[in-house]
Image (cartoon, rainbow over all chains, first blue to last red; front, side, top):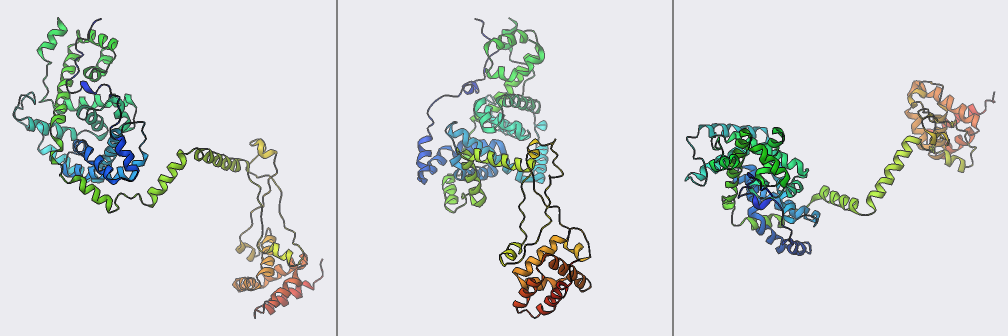
Length: 221
Length: 262
């Protein structure tokens, strides 16, 4: 059977295609917490705090905002944790709580703050960056590029930013993202595509105009 | 495969999430379409750039005592649901139970039925029942038995099979005090009942009637009481109350009651 010539999943995304069916490692802690063991809840916080903080940092773009939103996330989890059903993984449920906290915090920033953010982004925008290297891995300025990508990510509307963060950065599968964002799986796919296209335009100076030479050869061979 | 169809699926193609037969058709298109190849290549570069954020230590800025801070806030009661939250949780639990949704559906259906079909109105006038229990002659009420005007038999077969008892709207009391003639009989019945049951309250009502309207209104009320045979009983109840205002009003009722019926 013919193999797809260009179907080369990115090394960063290949592991996300299908969710691994396994026993949720958090269930035991959740049961203990529901039985009144507060240490079990603290253990849940410690287990997930870094991933939640990382997600919120990507969504909000500021460490202070992300830390506050992460605290809100765990407070909300403590408040509404009994709504968790075992139909989905606990981490998916937690992501949903975190995403709501991010969106609520985003709203509370208000128009003025958003306007200020836009001005700051504009002033330090990437279009003025001098000859940036073509790939993050072969550059000593990888941190600078990551900052730039993070900055452009913040320029996306939350509805597009959330799925692309969850898929390309957090590594969730389409179905899990649909569960987190409470939208259809098809919507997730199209939003990811739109978000990538928008980012591609914003990061034009970092994205090569032509594909790698070996790929072209492969197709044309 | 058409160009638009291929371009729409390039992200999923790059992720390797498309079925193999779709990939084969896309391969065929990509082999002949430099535009799609460039687009695919740029999308992959974008994905790699995004992926560089995944490998960065995003959580490096998280305080080491983050967990303690969260637990301290929980201990301080900041995670308590509050009144609205508790009510919301109870409501949610009730709706998720086996009895909640059927009961709610039944209540909704019943409400709808009442709104569409109408309802039998049972009217009790304050003081009227007690007047009967006090041995007074019962006052005939002008209750009308009619269909609701807004529900025609054609529009509602259910309503057509059912007689709906409804009272016509009462005129405002102020209109009766101004001398309106139609529909004031029930206000008179209501006041007679009040006098029988609560003489002092009735006398206060009489006092509250504007001076210019009081005498005419008392005349009409007295004639109503005389026609219904309650004037003498009402006068006696007023006197029994011992209220200093009772004498004049009771006398008025007695005088009018002495007028022979036409």
